[in-house]
Image 1: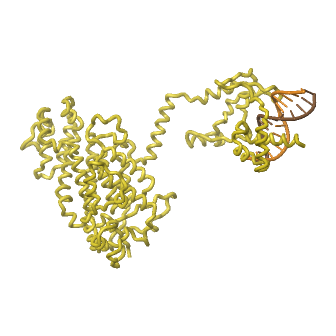
Image 2: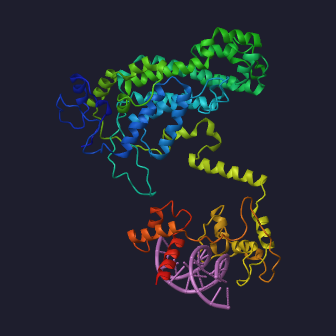
Length: 564
DNA sequence: TTAGGGATAGGC
DNA sequence: GCCTATCCCTAA
């Protein structure tokens, strides 16, 4: 028997809701009406499964994306969600509650996570997506239109609220997790009640047409917008041809369409023969006429209005179909003041959704021929394809960061001369190390710096793996001077006195131990025993502030030796 | 981090 | 130059 568990069965409310939920309870046994059904089957899904916990959080983000009224907040949420997708959520299945919530958030983020037009808030606003809706090209509009259609199709399915955990992110590529996880069966059957509702029919189709309207208009944007604003921009001929072509391909149904008519009216020879006009005759009306058409149809042209209406439609869909995330019920996630009323509605238990979902699961009988589906690039992944990262299309965020870092490094290398060569040359010009018997001079300090201590520990650096392997013996060390650049052993130029600002020349002056220090050491040895120099030093940090553990040890040796 | 050998500064 | 206290280096 396959388990089908539904989050819509989460209910803290009434007996009747619980009863409705019981129909979608995990097992075919009838649940007790008085018990609150779990949103998962405890035998098959660990409630503390990290994926499940992260999904709860992810859903709150998605929910807030829809409920918030602030562009900045949406853009912020997009960033958070991108992080979560990368770090916590693996591949997801293209059905069920997570898929729908993700698609909703993605669509809203893409359309409403940015301002529609350029305005005064441009420079200081780091938190929003840089490009504006008015920048969208035909391809981006097509993405939005397709996504809205897919979302609609997915939401009216009977498995719209099914909890389907994504696959785990695997530490070891190639490990087969498929057989471990029990994935709920998808139910492609359409919920006719939802499908026939006004939100999923008329409103959806109208929104789709409106998006198509702006898709076409994008061919002559942003010049048109500029022209309407100040009358200075010129729209290139080829853009107008593309615009004409777009109208033809988007609205070729033949029947009258309000949006197509408005677009058509922008052409100079619009009218009865407008749609059949020859390509060479393509030209737009005068700016004055365009402005008139624009002002007469401001509601349709206005991208901010489009954003608002799209948001409203998606909110209706979410309210109808998707349950409020558990954490959102508990008050997690912030909601903006202007949206509170709206949010309160969304937070009301979606009775419609629950009953709809309940009936859908109760009726689910088509189990035999279902196939499991998982795609490599899911809706979740598409968060990364969008807009401001266009040039990195197909790259993961990490890859794109690496690419950017490399570019930055290369740019820096062009501007700055690598100081290594010069430093090595200078080092070679410095005096050879003094003989051991000679008196210690300041120059010897530099000589000692050049000397390699046998016990020295080296950190290994290389700009790239290749460079590392190319290095002699594959063991390039940052402190290792290449053989060819090493100074000749017999050349002993005069010592150079190097003095750093504020630094005393010569070796550190000997400092006799004070009685206070001696006392601290002796007390320390009494307390901890000889050899516990670190403990002694940390026990008398004030008295022994100028001494290291070796000095303390030496002093104790001297003290004991002199006492003999 | 510690022990121990050795180098060295500085007092006599 | 010798002696001692302190500092330095290395091995474990």
